[in-house]
Image (cartoon, rainbow, N blue to C red; front, top):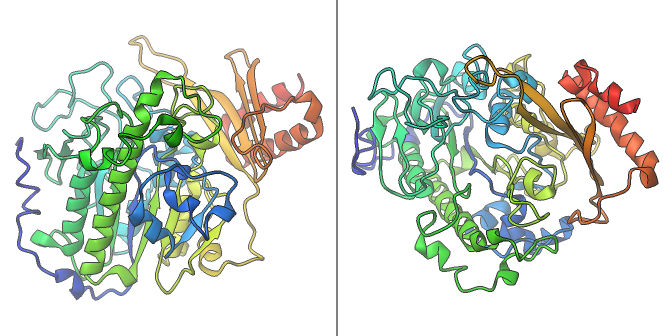
Length: 511
C-alpha cells in the first residue's frame, strides 16, 4: 500500500485541470480554515503597517508576509484571539469540538503514553456538523488529536512509528468526524520529508516542504481535479500546516528562498521585542523560524490564488489562524508555548467573507472553544451548534460590528501536566497545574504543585507593560488581584473546570 513517490496524490495532482468547481449549485458559502502550528500573532508584518499598528501596543516582527498582509486588508482581523491552552493537541481539541480540555477529551498533547487524551468517536465535531448539513468536508495536514494505536495500514498490529512514546498516528475512518476527503497524519516533524494517509489508508511521502505540498493538495481539491468532491455541494476544508512549528534549526526545516530573506540580518534586527534575550542559544533559530513564517505565507497565497482562479473566492469564508504562538527567546524561556505569555497565547485570527464582513480590526477576546461555534454561525449553521459546545458564537458581532453585543471580558489560561499512571506506566489522568485569566489589561496565572501549594504567580499589566517585563507584586496590587481571581473562578465554574469542581480555587483563596 505504501507510495514513496511525489507524483501521485490519490490521482489528484496528475488529473487534468478542470473548472468543475464552477458547477456548485448549492449557494451556501464554502469555508476554508488554514492553521499553521506555532505562529505567533506578532509574526505577521501587517501589524507594522498603517491601519493596523495603531490598534496594538506591540511592534510586529520584521517578517515578509505579503499574501497574509493583503488578505488582512480584506478581512476582519482580531487583535486578541487567545489559545487558552497554548499547546497543539489541547487547542485543536477545543477548535474541533468547541469544548475546553476537561470536556473535549484532549487534556494533554496526544501520544502513546497518554492513551486517554484524544477526541472520542461519540463527540460531535465541526466536521460532523458541516457534513450532516450537506457539505463536502476535507482535512489536509496535521491532526494531532487522535491517540496512536497499533493500526499501521502497512504493518498490521504495529504503530506507525518505531518510537517510545509514539507521537504520530493513523486515524481510521470511524474517527474522522465527517471529513470524507482525508490527507492527513498525526504529528511528524520532518518538514521536508512529510507523510500523509489518504482516504483509503495509502501512505504518501512526497519529499516536499510540507506547507507547499499541502497548499498544492488544497488547490487541487478546490479545482476539483480528479473529481475528488461533489461540486454540487459547498465544501468545508481545514488545512493544518506544521511549520513554523519546530524544528527550525537548519535548511532541512525551511526553504532557501525564504531563508534568504533573513540569513544576513543581525540578530537584534530580527528579535526586536525588548523582552528577548539575545544571548540564548535559541537565537540561532530566529532566521529559520521567520523563514518558515514566510514560507507559510507563500503556501497560503497559493490557496487563495486557486480559490480565485476557480471563481469561488466571492462565496467562500476564509480563515487564517494558528494553534498557539512561539516565545522565540522572549521571557528567558526555551519553551516556545504552554505558558501565559502573550507570545504563546495570542494567535492570529483573520476572517474574510466578501460582501458579508466589513474589513476592520477588532479587539474581540476570542477563546479557542469559541472558534467552532463562530465558524458555524458565519456559515449560517448557528442553529446546528451542538449542545455540548462550551464556546460562544460571535458570528453576529463579526458580521455586524454590533456595538451593543455582549463581548467576552476575559479568557482563561489553562495548563495541565501528566497525572496518575497505571501499572504499565501509561498516564491515565492529568493534573491541572496552572490556571489563569487574561483580560484587556491584565494577565494573571497561578501555578501549583501536586499538594496544591502555589509555586509561582505571573501577574502583568499588559496595557502599560505590553512585553510583560514586570511581574506585579500581588500584595501591592491586592484589589486588582482579587477582582481577577474572582472572575477567573466564575469562568472556571462556567466550564466545570477541575480547579472549581475539585475545590482548588477555594483552597487557594483561603490561604
